[in-house]
Amino acid sequence: MELEIAVLSRQGGRAVNEDACGWWSSDAVSFCVVSDGAGGHRGGEVASKLIVKEMLGWFRERPEGDAKSLEAALRYANEALIREQTSNPDVGDMRATAVVLAIDSARESASWGHLGDSRLYCFRGTEIIVQTRDHSLVQTMVDAGMMQPDSLRHSPERSKLLNAMGDEATFQPRMQSDTFPVLNGDKFLLCTDGLWERVEENELEGALVDCPTAEEWLRLLEQYVLARANSRQDNYSAMAVWCKQPDATTLDASALDSQRPVGSRSPRDDR
Image 1: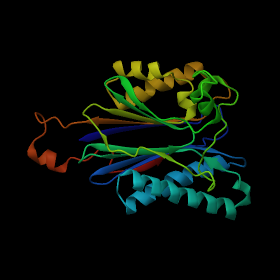
Image 2: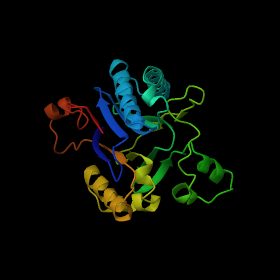
Image 3: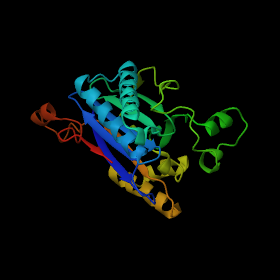
Image 4: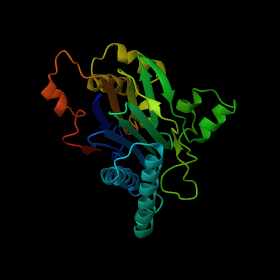
């Protein structure tokens, strides 16, 4: 299985971009991380970058894509964030969201986990078959039937998180515990609230119809964001991961032997 990975991260109308994105691939497994920082004195920017750096460093040393490994990587990054809070009082109140995806191309399976309100979606065909639930006050109220689903995008309380990176007491990531079989054509989207607040789920699905590549899809989603943005538009970031089978009619045996996930030769962090 081949992976096509595209990345989008913009400052929006804010003074700094407190989002961070990164990915890294071994011979068999690819890891993607998106984080959205929060906290005064540029703490959010520090937090999100630190989380991405620490998690990708963990995966380079331990390239395992199961839920247990992903949760351990999240905990490792959380501990690093807490150490930074302690050593640097200027960022002592920083917090961040995190969402992580691992795809095992050899086993054609995926695992993921998250804290906060950065999301993961999985699309089969053009339909959403997986959508993570936010660790937020409004999500809890929606689940209890006390608020309508559109409150997730429009409530004044929508940014109040119940769980985030940077707090040991509330560190409870939600993990995909079962092996998730990935099919040819499946697509994943990891994104911060600056994007999903501006783009409805049916629009995420509809945009797939007109976009032949992951990069074009993200560009179209960005157009939705910009069309609805105000002067205080939040940072918005996303990673698109499209899963494809190699075309046996166009790849010879030598090409198949050297095939690697797209971008695996030059992994990077995008902020």
